[in-house]
Amino acid sequence: MDYDATDLSPRERYKVLTSFVLPRPIAWVTSLGPTGVVNAAPFSFFNVFSEDPPLCMIAVNARPDGRIKDTLANIQRTGEFVVHIADEPLARAMHESSGDFPPDIGEPNHLGLKLAPSTRVAPPRLADAPWAMECKTWRTIDVNGDRQLVMGEGIHFYIRDELWDQKAMRVHMERYHPVGRMFADRYCRTDDRVVFPAAQGTQ
Image 1 (cartoon, rainbow, N blue to C red):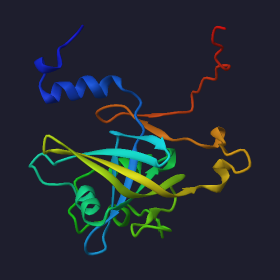
Image 2: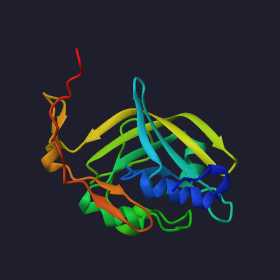
Image 3: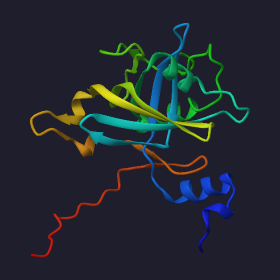
Image 4: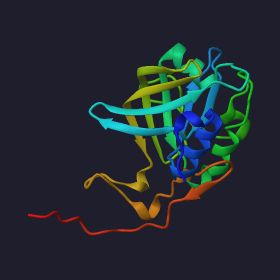
């Protein structure tokens, strides 16, 4: 089966991409509204791309009626946001926060999620998340007027103590259970892991 991208509708291209680029990490992003409401929303068009500076990118599309999503409006206004990774205990709440909430309803408050002050940005972090990165906007790229690629520079990190070997600078993988995005209403666990020995090239 093969397709020329120009022969497919945008929706069909979306299905081809999201059905096979799996699993995708999920950025659970908090941002701050103009009246102080804390917004939280997940984005699976996301990854990290650099360590110097530490950069991540999320893709934020417009709503079906063309309105800008609260996360993007908040980031455009403040230039600040916090990226979290959800683990299994938080997966359902993360999914529920993807619903269409009005700007005056904060998802953390509505879903009973605890917040903690951030260190270098105004939006608070989700207190129970295993990992969080406070970000300032580094670049924004407009895609066809209906999607924004927001690149954030990580300026402060939070890691749950039990997950991190500070001396070795390594995660305790047996204690860390992030969830990944599949497609439609499907997510995945990441506990079934494979270890390979170091690859040996030819001399």
